[in-house]
Image 1: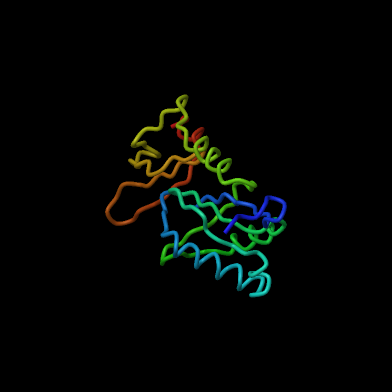
Image 2: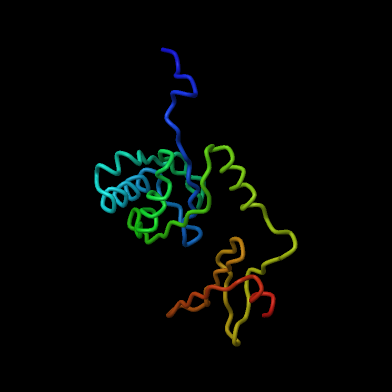
Length: 164
């Protein structure tokens, strides 16, 4: 069986999604079911069939989702309604849309590249209390207060951490 020429192929778009909170890595199959449920509950089964959504790749906290060209906006809107996946609370943020998976993978590599100019410590002190830096992605820094009873989570930026 021969493949179709490019002029007869269905045009597709690929949407790069970042999963928040950082460090949450859901199963790709569970993520597919969560996104499919969001698309079909928001737009209905007929529109879900037109969107033709599929989770193509899950690379750490980034996911690439495929859809038909012209339906990227509807897919992005449906992605914002996903709140849980596999029992974990998550939020999906659209980062970019492209016509090729390769360009999105290059973008993931650029976003994951470490920032050599800023060194983030493992621990810091805020108001006399010790905190652990749990995650540092991009400009966001998640800080958790050390303690065995109450755990307080702070969301800072790198500039805030430099002032401390």
